Length: 331
Image 1: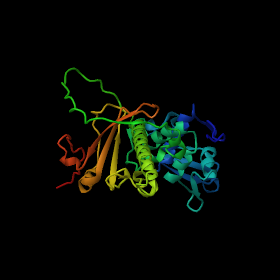
Image 2: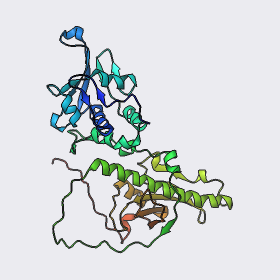
Image 3: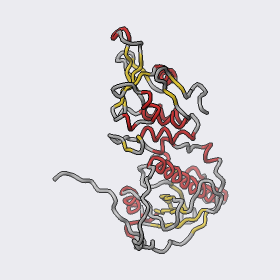
Image 4: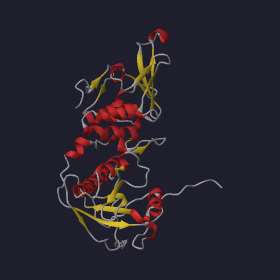
C-alpha cells in the first residue's frame, strides 16, 4: 500500500510539486537512475553560501525530464531538495555515504520498495527509469521488465482455472497486399514491454497449472510418486535454460521440456524465439514441445486455445524462422 508519508509537494522555492502519484513515481525513476543524475551532499560549512543540501545534478538535457523536475531545476541542470531526498534516505531506499558525501542508489533496493507501493504506479517508475518522454536512455539501462511485475503466489491464486483446448497448427500467415497507407503510431515501448512480459508469465502459469492437474491425477493413479518430483517452473528461477517448464509424460515415462509463447492476438501472430531456445529444441528434440497460446487475456475465464509444435524447430517445415538480430563488427 502507498506510504501515507509520500506527499505530492516537497521542499521550498521553487517547490517540487506533483499533480499525482504517476508523476511522482516517474520522477523517482529519473532520479533513481545513476545514468541520469548524481546526488551529492554539500555542507554550508564548506561553501558558506547556502544551507546544507542534497543536490541533484542531471547529466541529460532538462527538456527531457518530467515537468515537475523541470520546474524545480534552478540552474545548471540541478536542484536542491533536502526533504524529498531525505525521505528516501530515511526509508533506506537511497543510501548516504557520509564519508564521500554522496547518495548511492541500488536498483534492486529501489525496485523492491516500489513493488510494495500501489502496483498501478509500477509502470510510471519503470518509464521514468528507462525513458524520458519516450526517448531512450543515453546509455542503455540493464533492466529486466520482470523485475517490476507483481506476479507472485497471491497474484496467481486470483487467476481463475481455465480449460485448454488444443487446435491444429494454423494455415500460413496471409501476405500483405501493400495497398493503402498505414498509420504510423508511436509505441510506448515501456508499457508494451511490461504487458508482453506479464502476459508471457500468465501463459506460463496456466500451462504449469494444466501440467500440475494432469500429474496430480497420475499421482493418484500411482503412475508417479509425487508431482513435485517431476514438475518445475524453470523460467521463474532461470530464464536462460532454453525452456520454461519441465514436466513429465506418465504414459511414456519421458521428461518433457515445454516452451510457452503467448499472445493476446490471433494464432497466426509471429513470435520471437532466441538462439538459445532454438538450440535447446534441437538438442532435446525427442522430448521438446512449444505451446503457442493465442487470444489470451488475463481477465478472461474463456477456454485457452493453443497449438503445439514438437521437436527441433529449425527442422519443422511449417515454420519460417527469420533471423532478426546480428552482431556487427568492424573489419
